[in-house]
Amino acid sequence: MLMEKLYNRVMKLLLWSAIPILFLATYFIVPQLKSQPEATLESPLIQTEESSPISTVEPVSLSVFPTTLIQGEPARITIAGLVSAAPIQSLTLDDKPLSVFVDEGRLVALVGIDPHKKPGVYPIVLTLEDGQKIEEKIEVGKRTVATEEFDIPEQLGGNTPQAEHELTSTLAQDTVILNSITTTISPERLWSGQFRLPLNGSPTVTDVYGYSRQTGSVSLMHQGTDFRASEGTSVYAMNSGKVVFSKSFRNYGNTVIIDHGLGLMTLYMHLSETDAKLGDSVEKGDLIAKSGNTGYSLGPHLHLSVRIGGFSIDPQKFLELMGSR
Ligand SMILES: [Zn+2]
Image 1 (spheres, rainbow, N blue to C red):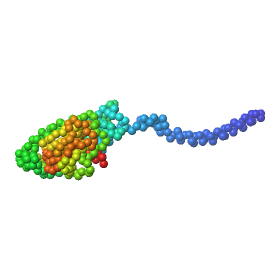
Image 2: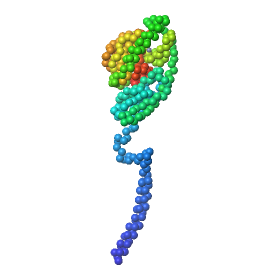
Image 3: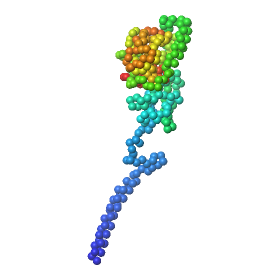
Image 4: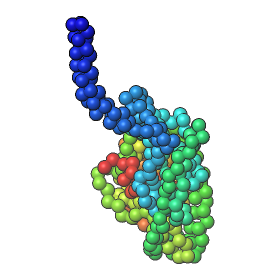
């Protein structure tokens, strides 16, 4: 009997003490269960504690700098979310392929906008080997073109109808040669790091890119930047590359063209003499020529042109994008 009473008391005690335990357990555990997010089709449940570091790699995306530009300006496209170019099948701007290269650990491409490209919005499409397409847009604004009247220099016959006729016909020939050189694309990048100025010090810009020079009935777009330079001033390679032209044009005068690879070239014109020879490999800062006043030039200066994918773009904008500051 005594044992039976004792057993009953113990059981009652256990029962009463279990109630608050159960209550506390319900109070703490149920809300925790409820706080778990529910999986949906749009956002599947992710076990963040068990995620491996690889799943945190950012998605593949494109960005363009600068975001707004006008005809005849360069831009840089950066691809994020890829550790190498291996998965890339193509990168195009307005259906034309672009070269992708690694710059300071990033996958990038350079774009030169045709100075005559119709203003508007154009698609940039990155296609990966697995068929995935990533798209961005680039907006090209219209360039306001100022016109200035220019004389035909005395060394090209002065302001006569015959000199004007000769200017037009020889310029067409010069342009054919120039375009045949600047549209060949070396598959390898020959430059590295930033581009330097072609002259030492802080040269003064005497003429900007993109305005129209009216010479009689001929209208010529100034496709480069002119720097003040007295005759015989040393001209240096803006970056490493290969000399693909080193002789004289009638209108551009003595000219050196350096191919930096991937469709990027720098052109130095109206030189008094050229030191670099066709086929030479040059390093950034190598002496390549002396500035002068040859060809269609109205005084000693250095004319610099920069071409990307065959299009002559604004050298000052190029230096803002790729140059040492
Ligand atoms: Zn010029």
